[in-house]
Amino acid sequence: MKRELNVVLSFVVVVLMLSLASANIFDLFKSSGKASFGSQDVSVTVAGTNAPTIDQPNAAIANQNPTEGTTTAVAFQVVVTDLDGVANIDDSSLIARVSRGATTRTATCINPTNVDADTRSYDCTINMQYYDENGEWDFYGEIKDQETNTGTRTVVPYFTYTLLTSMQVPLSPATLSWPSLSPSASNVLSNNDPTNVVNTGNYNGNVFLQAYYLQGETTPAESIPVNVFSVDSATGGIPPSECDIGVTAVQLGPADGNTVDTGISSNKGNPSGANVYYCITSVPSVSSQVYSTSTRGAGFSWRISYQ
Image (cartoon, rainbow, N blue to C red; front, side):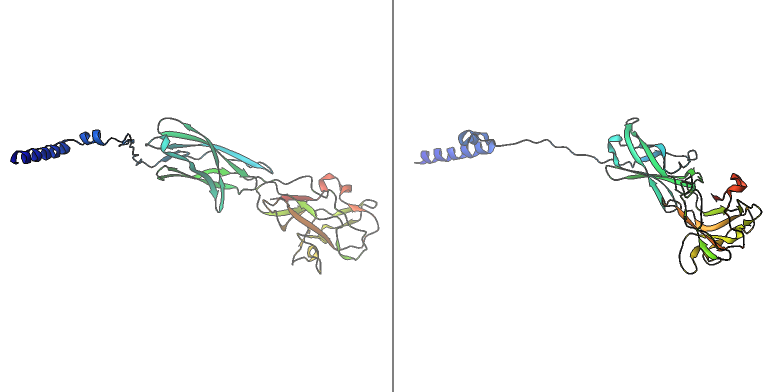
């Protein structure tokens, strides 16, 4: 009996020792035909620590000139460096713009091109409007990397936008006219105004008008002096707006050939332009005939200008 007990105990001890030594023995006995383990790759990304920098533009460029009635393309390159490599640059975050006061023009940037392992360039274009203010414009650039580190660049000033004084010609109407006038009549309005003056540049000021007296075509010794004419940017009312000198209207002349500031805005950037309405405030006592500037020659046509 003792011997049998010893055998049993020995068996138990051996089995326990074997199970502690290796699980594989049990796997042989308990195999199910199913996978008992799996594998996976492990990777980590170490974030870049260097913020990108905008290396160019870094200096002012030549003056830029407006193009009458349309846009002017200002082309330049933006060059960006990231010491963590070009792959760390976020192309979509690039901002390049110029500004003057509250006005901003933003560039379109294309063709990201690797200059070297850390540097990338972009072709950028800003479309300046013909009516954008003349003077100095400043540059601002911004770029981020994949970790949203930000690099910026300012160039003050970046360029000067020059003055373009221009208007749409020929003016309409080509010839001003009035209904038949009666001597001593007052506040007679033109029957084919206004003169529409469209500013096609970036001049920001008033409309000026140089006027000459109207000479009789039949009896040249008689004339209608320039100082009986007045103008305004509006019409209507009592008295009519273009006739109310010193209130809303401006008197032409008073001397022949004088250029006067009409007080009418050039309406920079407004495609509708400015309107000039005309009035004869007092018809002089002259004979019945046609009076015009044409009898005096082309040099005596009324002249509208910006100054």
